[in-house]
Image (cartoon, rainbow, N blue to C red; front, side, top):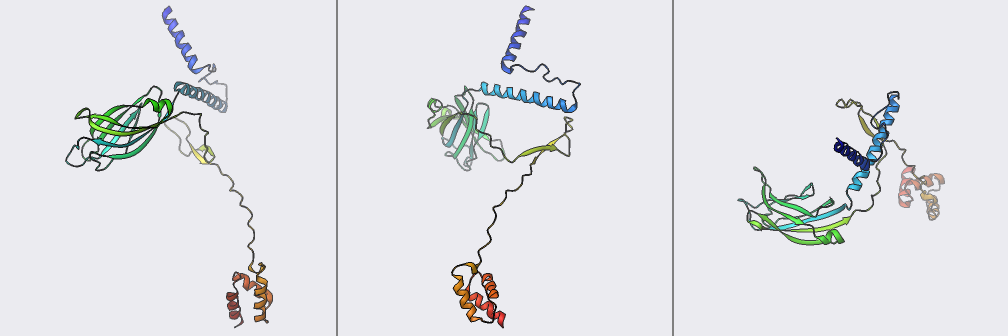
Length: 286
């Protein structure tokens, strides 16, 4: 019994070390509170738990960095099947799986030039590569595979490294060909600032979430007043231009019986084109 109690106390210390102190009423809502106060208390507790879990995830993965892998091409020793193979690559980093596009009719010399960027978990120092032949009516056939160590200088010094790596397969260990990979690594820096999109609010949705017995919510854009456009300057009339005075005087001499304000209006309407203004005035006088 003494050992069991000691184990329970040890487990309790571990929980406190990871989660830190929680309020005594965590996940227990007081019955005397109004529904609105209960909801506010639940939201506050959820925010506290989320903040502590985020702290745990950050502390649990020191040294996390971004790994970039360029899957350039491969040279295989044999083309399996009656026609040229359609190879693609499946790559595993930690527990994450990535695939390239299919090199149609790539045969023994497929090219992909696919860049994969992923977070490299702490302790992971190699990747697993598989090359498949994409088949239309049967399961895709595994052609080659290999465990490839990430070059130490890539992780330790952030260098970019390219090399050909041997592949295993039906022909034997390291006998199925080679794959050309390029590695680069960027150490994790401080969190990037969050770039917010359009402002959002949550409003009740018409349909409720029957599974959880909760009211559904849907995002709605907040209305924001359109930016006030700069006051547009009134267009400069052709008759107000310095060079227009001479042309207006010449036109007025040609049409002595037409009021000068009419000539000016026609001139402005034709954007200061003298010949067009004269033709317009001739038509008016007919």
